[in-house]
Each structure stands twice: as structure tokens, then as C-alpha cells.
Amino acid sequence: MQVLADAGVNYVFGISGDSVLALIDAIDRTPGIEYMPVRHEQVVLAHMGPGVCNLVIGLASAYRDSYPVIALTGAREQSKIGRDTWQEIDQLALLRPITKWGARIFSADSAPRIMRSAITRALSGRPGPVHVELPKDVARAESNVEAGEPLKFREIQDASRVAPNPMLVERACDLLLSAKRPVILAGGGVLRSGASEALLQLAELLVIPVATSSNGRSSISENHPLSLGPIGRYGTPFADKQVKQADVILGLGCRFSDLTTRDWSLIAPGTKIIHVDIDPGELGRQYQEEISIAGDVGLFLRAAMGEVKRMEGARRAPSYPEADPRVASLVKEREAERSAFFDPSAHASIPGKPQLLVKEIIEVLRPDATIALGSGLYAARYAAKIRVTTPRSYLKSLGLGAMGWAFPAAMGAKVGEPSRQVVALLGDGDFMMVMQDLETAVRENIAVAIVIFNDYGYGSIRELQKTEYGGRVVGSDCTPLRFDELARQMGALGFRTSKVEEVKPALSKILDSDKPGVLEISIDPRLT
Image 1 (cartoon, helix red, strand yellow):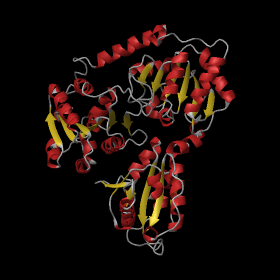
Image 2 (cartoon, rainbow, N blue to C red):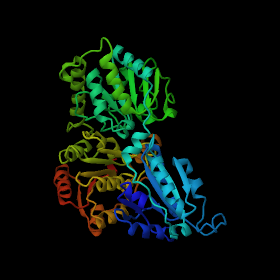
Image 3 (cartoon, rainbow, N blue to C red):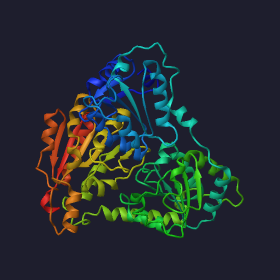
Image 4 (cartoon, one colour):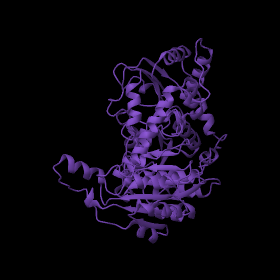
């Protein structure tokens, strides 16, 4: 535990079990780190057997979306491992496909070395989850081995950054300068590299519009003149159109996934692709690429800026991006699409006036508010239209897309940055997966606002059944629940409305209270 505390880990989220009691006791005795019990086992400290099985969704989400996580799991005493004891499974094998690395601590003396390795592996290169298993007898043993010098997250990340090949950077700059309709596609790798500022500098230098994948949202302010916004399933038709028309695309830290490219239909066959990614396995995986560059996105951007400034004929950017005719035209089209989306007469076939509900939510949030977006017809289709303007202010499970992710993610975001407003936007089916952790939010005073678009079932699935299965709705309706009453029973604030004009006052009360709260927006399921 001392290794984790020295590295700056402040909280360990978990559920108690007899195989991890020694770990929990060690956390309690270690200054600077706190054990926070939760009510669902998608956590980072889990009891053996069923507890580890419940880790799968959380770790798989982290693995697919490249989040660094250290999962600590208990195990039977070493003399009992492999003898088919109660609750025993091969935990290392179970989690191996969804973690970067896994190890068992065989002795107390080896614990500092293995924990230091776990932290380094989780943060290095393409981040991701790691798994450390600790048998009960080892957890109870004492050791005189020191924890070592404190690890620093930034130093670990910096040490693993791979610089791009200078010749490939030069070729990429040549291609960008000769392009007529270039577009930058920023993925999650921009944020993981801390390269938002460098991205903006290169885009402004070359006057190139920037689209994002969903994981790349917030890498550039979506109010900036060069921002096209997100593309793909959770994007906008406007942004999709610009990517389709591009003659050169610079992909930065993105996977060109099916969601981002609408099943690989957005990029025209003749488009030349420059792809930069820290993971060589992603290069050329989805498209034939003109230039593939293995390296850290931030290092590439800085190298590219230096190269462009040195190259003969590098064009000078206007004082303001809007001064460029192409950019001015794009801004006009972007804003026109947005105005049309929020028009009161739009989406007439969808009940609840979803665009107006979202508009009310937008008007309450601060510019740096963190949004955790969950599953559900209204959250995915409409709440995704909220513009994000501050780096790392948008959270969504994309690779796995599991329900029950957004609310815990919002809680973690609030614990990490308590001064920010944090709002989870999700459907009722999503919230019901983890609603028991509202008790955790109340107990630990994690002041998140939870906005539930309650259409009394799995609205997205219900819609598919109506359109593709002859209108036969089977298994998609849920028994009506009053989430506002549930919230108040647990000690949180609870509000319920079906009226657009009541959304803003209710959400404001929650955000101003410095307490966790639920705003349930009731939408008649008979109309969906």
C-alpha cells in the first residue's frame, strides 16, 4: 500500500471480502490513502471468485478505452491455490485478455517490486488496466523491504513516450501542406498525451479543421472556429460530411473504429490518411494508410510544428481562423445545423421535446463541467449534443459501451476534481444497473448530479423492435419506478418532472447544493 500512497493514489474503491481484509486493514494503516467501500463490484479491490468475476465489465471497459487501472484481488492461501477450494477460479487467466499485465505476489518481500511494476505498466505507452493477485497468507505477512523512491505518474508517462521518425514527420507535413481539404481527426490519444494545446497550435498554424472521435471529445473546444465536432454514431451530420469530403486526414491517437467511421463508410476511397498512434498495432488496421507513424501524439505535434515552420513555402495562418474563407464557411454551416437541431419544432416524432430538455441542461452547466454520458435513447442521441470546451470534461464508455458505467465514472471524476460540476446523463435502464451506489455518493458526499431520462425501459431497444420486428416489443419495458423518491430515501436530493421549464430550476438546485442528487425526467413510454 505504501507504494500506491507514495505514487499519489488517494483512494481505493472496493467491496469487502475475507480474502481482502488484510489489504483493507493495510490501507487503513497507511497515511495518504483511503479505502472507499462501494455497492457494486465493478471496482478495483475485489474479493476472490465472484468478486473477481464482477470486475470483468469495468476492466474490459478500461482496456478498450485505454484507462490506467490497477485491480487488486484476493486469493486463497498459497497452499490451497489449485486445489479447487471454495470460490476458487483461475483469476489471472480470467482477466488476462482484458488487462495489459497480471501477476501474483508470492511473498511479502516481492510486493513493493510487483506493485511498482504494476503502476509503471498501467501508465506506460498505451495506458490500460493491470491485475495484481494477493493470496491471504502473503497479505498478512510482514516485510522489512522498503517501498522505494516514490513513483511519479508524469515521469512514468514521459519515460515511455516514443518519438516519431523525423523523416515520416517531414513527409506528413509535406502532404498536409499540399492538401486542398485536410481534416485532423483527434482521438483519445490526444488527451492521454496531454497534447490538447499542441493540437490547437498545429491546427491554427495550418488552418486545418479538427474533428474528433467520441473518445477524443474535449481535446479541442467545440466552440473554437476550427472545431468540426464529433463524427460517427455519436457525432453530427455536419462533421461527418467534412470528413467524407477531405482529401487528406491526419488521424491522431484514434482507432478509426466502426463507431467513429460509421462502419468504415465515412472516409472516401481516395482519401490519403496519415495515422499517428502510440500503439503500432493500430496502424493500418482499418484502412490503407499513406503514412503510418508510431509515436506519441504530443511529440509528433511538436515535431510537426517545428518542421512546418522550417519548410519553404509554409503558409502563414491568418490572425484569426475565421479569416480563412473555408473556415468561415464551416463555422456558418456548423452553427446553422446546431440552431436547427435545437429548434422547438424539430424532432416532432420524438416525445418529450428532447432537444429542449438538453438545451435547458446546457444553460445550467459551467464551461468546465464534466459530463459522463451513459446509455439510453435520449442520453446517446440528444445529450451527446452538449458541447464540451475543456480538456477531459467528457466521459463515455465507447469500446465496450456497457450500461452502468456513467454514474460510477461521474463519481470517480468528482472525487478526482471536486471543484468541477459533474453531471451523469443516462437512461433509466442504465441507472438501474448501479443505482445502489447512490448510497455511496451520499455516505461519502460525492456531489454528482444524475439526470435520468426515464422512458420506463430500454428505449433504444424498444425502438428497434418497433421498426425491425413488426412492432413487437418484448422484454424492453420496465416496471415504473420513482427515482426521485429512491434518491430521497437514500439521503440524496430527488426531483421529478415531465416539463421542459422545470428542468433548469431542479438541476440548478442539485448543482448548488454541494450534495448528490437525482433529476428524473419522466417521458411517457407509450409515445416511444
